[in-house]
Image (cartoon, rainbow, N blue to C red):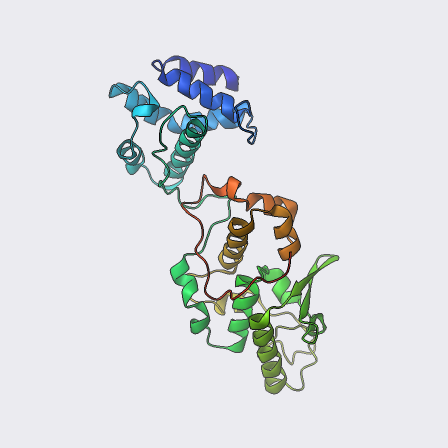
Amino acid sequence: MNLVWIRTAISVLPVPLAGEIRAWVTLLRGQGRHEGDVRDYRSIRRYLAHIEPVLATWTAAGVTTLRKITTDHIEAAVSGLSGQERQRAAVSLRSLFKALKRERMVFRDPTRQLSVGHLKGLPQSVRSDLLAGLMDQAKTPLSRLVIVLVAIHALPGEELRTIRTTDLNLARGTLEVRHGMLRHTLYLEEFTHRVASDWLAYRHHRWPASTNPYFLVSQKTALDPDHPVVSRTLLRKTLPKDVTLVGLRQDRILNEAFATGDPLKLMRLFGITAQTAMRSSPQRIQSGQPGCPADRPINPSRTAAA
């Protein structure tokens, strides 16, 4: 049924535009000169449906080939759209022209600078202007520690909350992090080592009688006999406005992905799953990422050897 719909939609297009769209479908099926992810016909139908109104507008204006499409055409096509409708159209257009450019069926890619916004399922980069002064905005030792562990070592919030004091070994420069029943070792570079040491000294000075085994504590949890973990709300409050734990973590993984392009290294470095590592690869995010994430000034060195 999906294939029939695709063929019918293509059949009403003029030549050679119909042939170009047909070639795109073939490429999405993994049958081009270059290897690529294979899409099922249901997904291809959605891609084509997202840009069917755009193609209809172009053909009504006399366009018979995608070689004639310019950046002005693209901007006009998405200018009247918003939200998910714009995102879907932009992603489909970028997929179309990127594929045809790779196969040398068009001379240029007019969608190269097209921003698609934030798409569900794809990691996005925190803006560099928010990251640049992040450490300067940290008002407490806890804030500095949280920012460093997330922005440099890409720790998720839940793992931050369950780190135990005994997991930190300053002499060896390591921090053991729990992933369910598994453990991942972080190797602390000088900057993180100093911030962690400062936090530990502050913690002992502020709450010398605390028996809470968790590395991160607060005024509420430090002396609580039930030894609770810190709240998610507290972690969120350690960050400046418009910055999130998820965004910081994704930005760090993205930066490393663009620097190395090696999913296996991402898995070793951050203790992430193969699925997360593959989602963060430059090849996967090119269709939804306007440009490479900027280098982050608070990251003075790699967090671990490959």
